[in-house]
Image 1 (cartoon, helix red, strand yellow):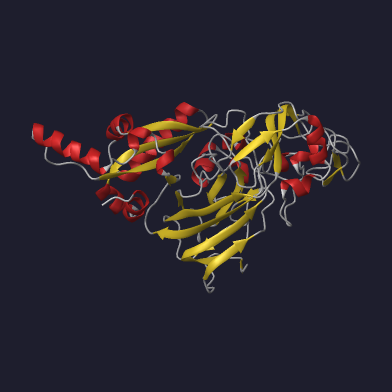
Image 2 (cartoon, rainbow, N blue to C red; image 1 turned 90 degrees about the vertical axis):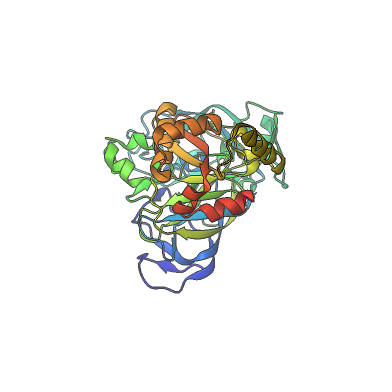
Length: 444
């Protein structure tokens, strides 16, 4: 059920369930028509095409991803938050390709993710097609010249277990065979406009087995102004500051607009709850950039971008004004120091307190703040300040809590982190998310 909503404030019957299989071709913001509205408490199901590499080698794209059309959530107003509870997530691609990138100079204005052109005929954002396989396969429709603004410095092709458990990189012969029917093996959705990265068939690292652990790299709510979808964050977004294309803006404009949906945080996976700021009427929930796996930090700059399907439920949190996302991670993903104590541990704490005369024991739960910045130091400071601002705890107390009952972990290089700490339940209740934390972690 896809109901077009040109204006998120328009009165429309709210759907209890909505499926989205249409995409924005690289741009997020108020100019994008929303689908919906979806009822508060409703279910959203999406089929998403791969993120980075496919859009990167498709010159018509003006962003580095291909995310779903945004969905309006009934009752969501600017200054609220929307909780996205991820119920189900699965990879549908049979194979993908990724690796360390290099730019092709002379084929873009300032930023190759955003402002590509054909060096041969000068066409801006040219339509293109795939001709054969290999590094020169992407061709301009206008003049036939090879036109991709990206190439591999070191790349690999990887096949994926249908049960989403394991994967294996392959040799050149297998990579060439996959490239011959790249859209099929990528499982590109019908309305996806990108070229499959499998067409480039770069296989420098055969025989490496790896675990699969699917997650969404770009998920959240619509920014307050039009941005390239991959730049809805502080580290990638910094390249928009003073940029020589139509998305150029100031640092202040970027930080006022972005919602930090592009966070490449590998614990945003099945079972997690992501709580996102609302910066446009209706929130405009979108998602994309599913990865089959990734360690902390996305060290190579890119991971295994795949097609996939996600199902989640939405809940509006009234009056919770956020600058960036809050994450309730699965227990297995929480840093050890922030995991809720077992009944046996709580009993030992009570005994320890009784021995020393400390009879009051704080009731708390884990909460993770996403921090972003141009580098990891700025991102960490940003996450700590966000934690202090939202909880009302002093900055110094946040530092102490994150030290003895929490952690700071890398989500993406160069500048996205997770700041996790144990927070008093009465504060979480005041924020309007205490019920989510209690249910998620089975707290009394």
